[in-house]
Image (cartoon, rainbow over all chains, first blue to last red; front, side):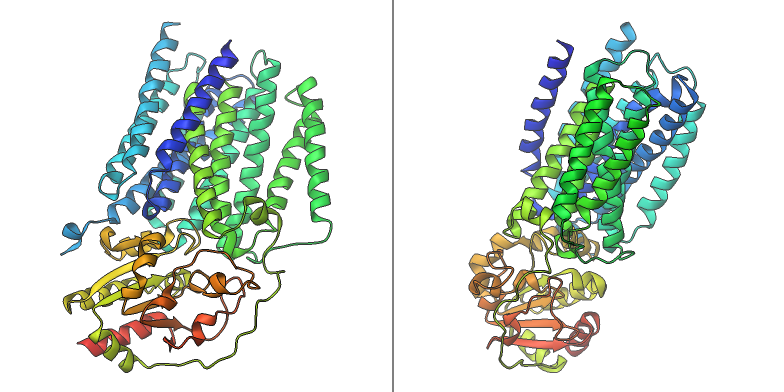
Length: 96
Length: 453
């Protein structure tokens, strides 16, 4: 039942994703990708347990490396997306 | 038990914030706010994750976060906008390797069900492919390695063999899972190899497709990792990213009139050359360009990757401003695959302070291109090649283009007569209404600006 429940979530999110993303204009495709990158850093949440549960030494190392990589994604992804989006100005804002 | 409910409720909140964030990305006016919402969602998810009861020690978590945080911050601050494709490629790879590692570490958990093992296998496989594939993509984009497609005879056979080997070792591993099984390392090795093999046959001009696809893979890998460790938010967020990447991949493929399998499996470059073109090229100098522009009332700039290379976006914007002050209507027409990643040109133009109302898409400009007095092509080539429309023998035949040749006059800013990224000749240069402005794009535009003042 648990598996069915997870698959249920998966299918709904995929449909939701298709709906949302197809409305993003081409102008914003690069920020969309870097923003999506940041979201895929969600693996961080899983990595936290591996790094902190003290299962075995190797698992801790693997988890720590995963935390580091995923954090790069999250922090770097959101910051660079914000930097890009800040540059998109409308006509009224762009006029100095 | 109580804690688990709170954690899961927090995950619901962050899922909602991710979704709202993506929704607000639908317009440049709200996009920045959307990104913030999404980051708050992430923060909530991470805090909820930190409260997980299995976590007994925080020192390694903190160490990992500090390292990742510093690298991420520096990368985000220092990166040049022209290098965004490389950075996104690299970050895709980091997402992939993180999922691989999480899957691997999950094998050390107390009891692992068969279903979990299968998903762990998938997380490691997709994560590994994403990682090595992204590194190759990074290498190609930053020109550390050659950006040409690498194709050899028997490539498909080798790849088929590789896939078969992965399936076989995967099944064997799932039947007898163990964290120290040699099969595990075989799977990781094969996955990394597959990533390399998947990206090397893809040539430079097709890179936007690859980045979008790898973006999708990094999401799918996170999703698989979510199944492996029974975590809802990984599944939701991962599948959102997966869906996003797939849509972008599809848009890119359509914009090049090629199927995904065609992009992935047949290296470009090795194709036949279209009709050889003869005719006279009509060069123009900066002064004459000025006279024509001075009289124009509707100008469309068509930028390509060459504009980024020449760092010409700022002078282009400057010229746009001057033309506007001169009573001229100005727009910037961006082809979906211009640049090295989806939307790359728009970011560069936004950086140069071009208001987003002036950024128009191919489908908006084409119906009214005949009203354009001057179309200025800067560093774009294949995306304005009329051969794609008219010449059935052209390798890029069928690819939708911006029909600049239908404008009253076309200026092509070009360093020399060399052909574009795909190596295809461009009949546009020989058209009656085309004028070639040879030289560095930045200097040429600056020259025209100087004439105005």
